[in-house]
Length: 126
Image (cartoon, rainbow, N blue to C red):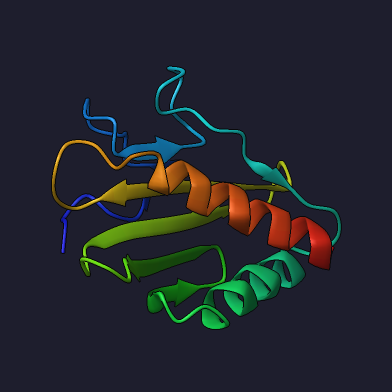
């Protein structure tokens, strides 16, 4: 497991230079993706994200705290593991996230697609 996971000073780890990572806190177009805004209680947003992850067999929850979730996503074909993190920014009512491949250089857009699917599922539940 990578040693740069988690939240430090309100920030997830930056993406590497390789194109196999997306993050709401990245400022470049290749890695950047919009956070998920939520209304209401952080605990409700957290519960919704957790339910989305638990309903999908590709995800295994590794860490779950009131403002942070780390899950491993395992690809169905090659069984590669990606690290998916969610940071619930209570002050701004935003869900920041990062999804990064552990191995390889490219990911054919899989991490971005996965996070957009989670966004759509969250918005459908909200």
